[in-house]
Image 1 (cartoon, rainbow, N blue to C red):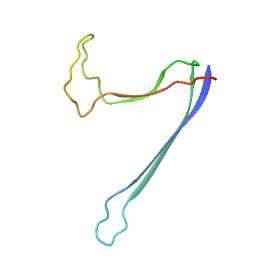
Image 2 (cartoon, rainbow, N blue to C red):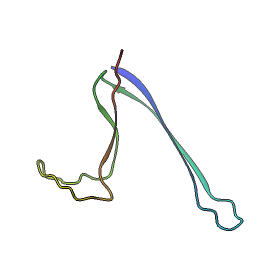
Image 3 (cartoon, rainbow, N blue to C red):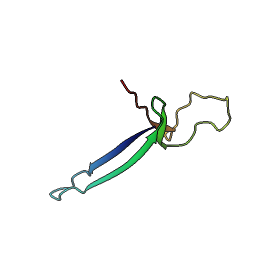
Length: 76
């Protein structure tokens, strides 16, 4: 097992309206993940599954497609 610290930061600036300063927002998430060395591990997912039936696939696009964030740690 390996331990990995994951840090995600986001910064956004809204469109500027006239002479007003734009709204700004920042967010940060820090977490620690333990995973087996050399294996892919899903650490986050978004969206929904495209089709709930196993073995049935479609090429139709969805705006809320399922996305996975995976990590794999390799040693030299």
